Length: 549
Ligand code: CA
Image (cartoon, rainbow, N blue to C red; front, side, top):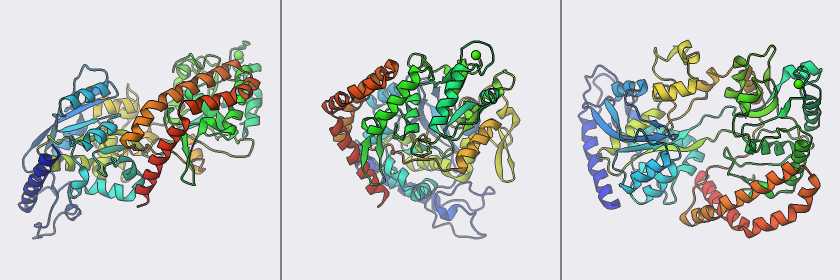
């Protein structure tokens, strides 16, 4: 399979070079995207374009690709999306949906495609990149590193971001997909009912000790003024996020933006498991104490994910740690006189550290790739590369100029109809516009900033003005042997940890944590903790070696 594919590429590349040589210089539209950097400027008058190796858009003849896009268990590709209508104008390339419109499990859909040998030209969606690496190594997807001439924008991005190259390179050294890159920006922050502080004559807490005083007052002193002891001082939509309170006592909790990743990298290039550290034990003892004192939602482990939606409009939730854009949005939605749910800086730990562990994952496990069955991989990849060009990036983030945004001082600004429409901005873009899709594109944080509530923007500025960040674990690429280890051990270890941590917190007795701790560590060793850490270390060392090469 691999060999015949290589031959196909050689033929296609030859053909494309011919097309480039014959490109029509009299065309009235300057190329919107040069395949090669020599074509990014319109050719000088009478200029010689014989050197052009890449692909010039729009193509002389229209081209169509079959596109299997199934994302987030509900979205399939829709060719009528304005972004792709506009792309068709600019490139002369259209995509045709091949994904099952009624299926509700995106991963299952791509696994079914694997059984069929990936017959479509292009594949995309969330949580796809592991399949691109796995099946790419078997020859099912085009190695895009053999097509750099057609990917000048993405190549330039990788050259400037070796950390991204290190996490999209498969164990065989090839790159099989273009990923969805999230733009930095502030992610989760601490939020507090600052109008409750005012009601009780309290100040914003700056240390964990002051925070405990505030939460205790929220619990006991009727900050919502209804005469009932109905306040829930600290809550989270997900209990896993609540565990991150351990940060306030100097303990790391998650390596990156997923609750399954609990191994942390160090500045010395080593790794350790956060949930076995002495400071983590001390933190859990404090969280158990807070829970016993009613400072943490007593339903945190059973509530599901509806706490913000329920507690904020009911005027009973005091504090959380959540995504800044969606959480600050409650300030506009909740109809309670004086309601202020504001970002506060991370309270300092007893040792004086002030940090925010949560960050957006830069390289998402989402992306798109070209099947080895595609007859024109160079054109397909040039089309995908366009999403990383300056114009393509605006289009894939903001939609179509004049329809969804206007250029103001050289920057795209959403129209009021988008910002204040019936749907949330991100849902509208993903469902109606074809922007912000979970395939290979490069997010621009400005898109999110524009729909972040004023209160949230203040919070963003606070977190941006201070660097609270800590070292993140990258999404590692595992060899087959390492992957076996992870598959065998990780979920059992996490499940045992979840069980014990829940037991300790609900029990509410710090002494029990002390009494159980050594048994807990011994059980984790039995479950293969050292072997797990060895697999992480090996993959992390490999990541560093690619990044530093
Ligand atoms: Ca009350």
